[in-house]
Image (cartoon, rainbow over all chains, first blue to last red; front, side, top):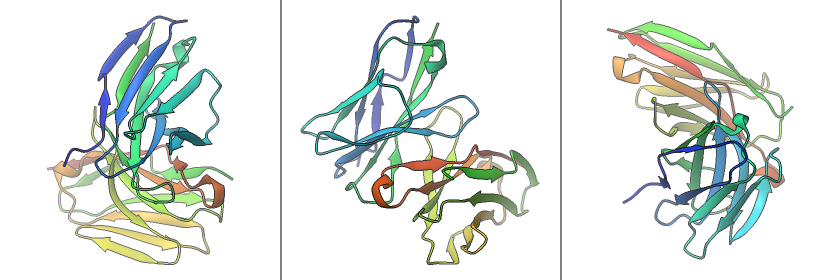
Amino acid sequence: DAGVTQSPTHLIKTRGQQVTLRCSPKSGHDTVSWYQQALGQGPQFIFQYYEEEERQRGNFPDRFSGHQFPNYSSELNVNALLLGDSALYLCASSPGQGTREQYFGPGTRLTVT
Amino acid sequence: QQQVKQSPQSLIVQKGGISIINCAYENTAFDYFPWYQQFPGKGPALLIAIRPDVSEKKEGRFTISFNKSAKQFSLHIMDSQPGDSATYFCAARGGGGSQGNLIFGKGTKLSVKP
């Protein structure tokens, strides 16, 4: 049973560029949440997708947007990259919007130069 | 009110010893308190979790103690092993309309010395 998968593993972008990160949830899970983890910090909630709609959003600017597809996979898009966007981006899936347990993928390490 | 405060920032324990990590919260609407273990270069892995109507939960060598009145909870790792060396995060889930939002502490880096 495959767990949460994310691609790419690593990414280097230049300030001002745009980036798309991808996530496939664990089998049987239909809810995807995205988190940003800065170096030495705990993950911070960006937003959650369920039934192809953004259901909740953390304190992140509109430069951060997302999408969920009918197969429950999800994308995180970040526009106009800033140096401060350099972080590990984590995707977590759960079997239902109200389910407590969230299972994380390995993350995508984004470096903005 | 949306914060989870975790201590200590780092912890060194001898093999076979007990590791204790503490967390405190303010928001009484939080309804779920998980602990995650993260190895370098990996995503956080769900270790054990507790609901606020339970005072203790044990799974193998890992125990959560929960004090609802004090708004504190802690992770105890019994018989700590070098393989337990990792960063541990406590978290809390917002209740009501914030059910998708896990709020994490800043983490505790645990080193278990052989």
